[in-house]
Length: 241
Image (tube, rainbow, N blue to C red; front, side, top):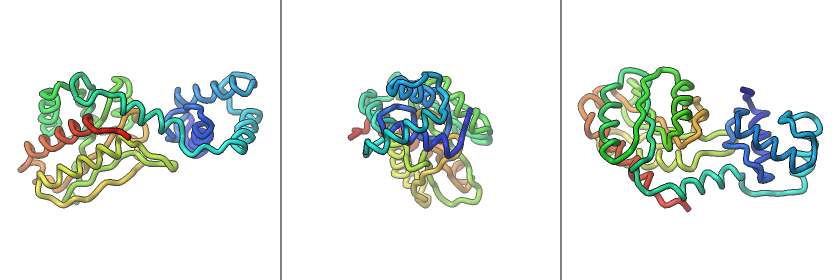
């Protein structure tokens, strides 16, 4: 797929005009292609999905005449969250780790299953492969867990890039940080927006929870998985304004 700042700019411009090209992530995927086709149909040029000089010229001309304050992709993302059921029953939760945390993931899976969720556990060091598996399974949310041996606390990342962010991912990151550090008695490293592959390439709200040192996970494994499961349940119950 085509990737880069030029693709992100295209997504920004289409979204500002009301054409849903998916999340602004700099990846020219199916959503972006659909947005381009819809735009071409609307302006009456050849509908071929190719962003050539004529399409670009019309895109710039129309944007100069229309000032939209919010991208349609952000509106759609929040509406999907509003319409989702306030429970994990029947929801599909993807959880992943790059290696070394199989026991933690297994315990988290049991907790989430007990809440009625469908759970896909991914043990894969390649973030892009994890993202593809979660997308293929149409997961509703993804939680990635990482061990940072140099850390002495917990930090949670969500997708943010190209002047936009994932509202669902940010909310889950806030809930994780509100529960996990306290449950484990470790430092709260806060939340941060990032554009790493697992967060950028997933279509659903996603977070990466980084923890350290390793002794914390070993000694407080049950408290960790209980807190993570509680955060995901609270995320499902969130009221989206």
